[in-house]
Image (tube, rainbow, N blue to C red; front, side):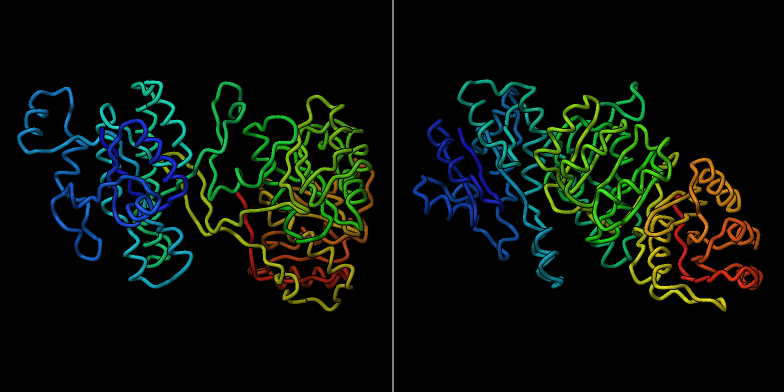
Length: 510
């Protein structure tokens, strides 16, 4: 038996080669892998002894050879293939262990295009694809985490068709992801990220309990190992809907840096938000906005949940709490709620991946864009367009309102008072309807919104929204501006002695 080992990631390869040798495999290797194995005292054959041709063109050509690919590809149970292999003196290669040149690490380290080009693997993907194609006769290993599993299967002769098939699928995933990464990088470098083809590649982190509904299957696929490295299931199993709700709550709660922010979400929309002097008070104030909708909701806590906060949260039914972390005492308190799910990032604060791009599925395809960014300086640099200007406290509330509005479904208006959201209207077909719906809900909750600030993620097309805000007692407004009726809107704000700020940036979310 013969095994060909050629890896860029050499973790575990020495031990793997030793095990293969002990099982009777002749080890063939290339370049750096050959050197590592030889220095470790392993009896290894250099690839040019097999190819009968020297490595050339600075290593660009070393395994592209019929003695390699013939040895991988010929069908062992085909008499014609076996006869031709014997005639050509091609010896079979029964195991191929390859992982590819570190293209990702290279583009993260340098912008030198010549170096980047040299780190595009050619021979590696070719060997992987050859071995995967002939998986019935050849074991293809592309992941170092599979080394022990492969050794055990060979030892126990349990390398069944299904076992080999699974390695084959993994191998094609490996090369497909690699080629996609190269294509996406080239398009980012030369076509602003929008080439003729766009490849979305994710690695499965875990299956969800089901999809949006019980009759649908679902799974979470991650970029850059974000979830597998950071997201921790403390209690319970995440569903599809849990994850989309967590995403909405997490984005809002984490957008205020180190501040003790708490966001409550129901069906992807915020129904409570606050930033106070400590997390307990933030949660208490966030809950006041809409405790009815908060029932069975998802709460994102930008910090560590302690026993005091856990007891407070246990007063109502919550489905999910995601936090930077939980104290042991808090986890014990939450154990009283059987249906409650807890997730953490093992961190003092919530973590986000800050993806550069965003996409949404539509019928027959997907739309793809740069990710929206609600920058911290948008409120700071906003222009006051009215006679009156906001106080320092109102500007802090405007920042909260602006960020929450920008991360909530359009049409959206958000009312914030003393660091807490007191009303929100979202996902409406009319902006004035959103404003009026928010005011109506606040009145039902018994919340006083007089003196609050208001944010609209897009411009007011008419003055009616300002008139409605004034009737509710709003003291300051922030919006993008840009309407052909801006002067009328500004005039309305001045009439009501409301300070108004234009950010010039719109944040639609559909």
